[in-house]
Length: 474
Image 1 (spheres, rainbow, N blue to C red):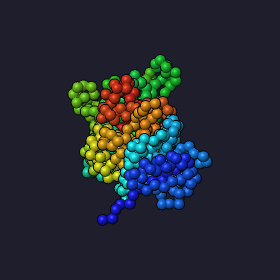
Image 2 (tube, one colour):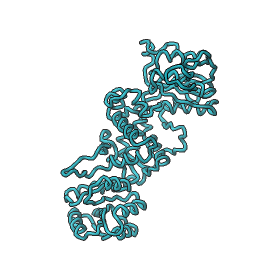
Image 3 (tube, rainbow, N blue to C red):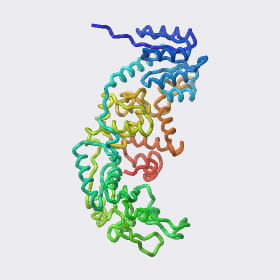
Image 4 (cartoon, rainbow, N blue to C red):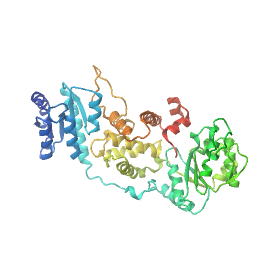
């Protein structure tokens, strides 16, 4: 039986004593070690090949700095794993290390056990990445312009129903748990209908206070209430001859329900503070994650409105009932992230995919999408491995503040928090404070298994405020 080839490690440092001591530690475990005395020499060695399995790279060197060398190395080979070495554990060092593709970084002076532990961790990741090299995607993102992915029989029934209701103006009630993609279904109905050339407006009824929702939907006249300094056109008028999507309609107050019923029965609206009725030609699609039948019995939802809305019902199954679709959804998410966020991760290891498939997903497709996004951001190389998944799924990635060691310096594994937050703030157009608030809200929601009531209480905000913060429009 042929002995396995030892792992190769390159040490790049302009201090000969550091190279010598680190080499001695690594060779005790049988690693094949080579050395380079400068950033320029190290980059040249990597480009000449063969590429080492792992690189230890000093941050501060004469000539080309470690960060510059890291950029050169990782730009030509994203799979290359690099551990930075530094005596200065600053926030800037940590952020730049992870920003430019380092696997991790280690503080000087070295603890030999930590060096060997980190090297073993990196080399295992290298082996895992190589094992995923034959991965083939199961979907093409261009084939799913609707954004709805799934081949399970329950989803095929949904697609058929969408096709059946697009030819008419029938009112449709879309039901399903939070995160199942109810707005995607509504959007698909609109796109394939004869009203597709006109407006599609989505209104989250739960995110608008009761005292403002009528003004939002029907508009108001100048002076009709305090603060109404000008006339306002409501969503129904703006959507004339188009389609309006009333999301979370189960959260709508009874008084507003009465006015919605009038629109359905007579095709008329009346602005708040106005005396004249106006005709509108609007198709209504509605959605809820609540049990409307129970609400009708409890007299918290109008029975006549229920029957007007529930002409055709499309029930979206929870993700746990169509786990067979998870590999396709994962592939779709990765391709979408590559296209929209410029994230180069395009694979997932079989072990990671198995964990994703067996998870219960209380937050449904939205939770899965968020998990893939987080995991892709912190992944080294071009594949999501088990280590990149959240701990609650069986992985080891945590989006949390770095722990503090003796002396206040950060410990080794800070990449999850820094890399993820950096990517989110870089892509965000909403500002740092709102982005951090949204990330905290989403993380809390995930930890509380999709329970919006408990999450709002934990964060000390109202449930509508939480949904607005998360931008929920399912």
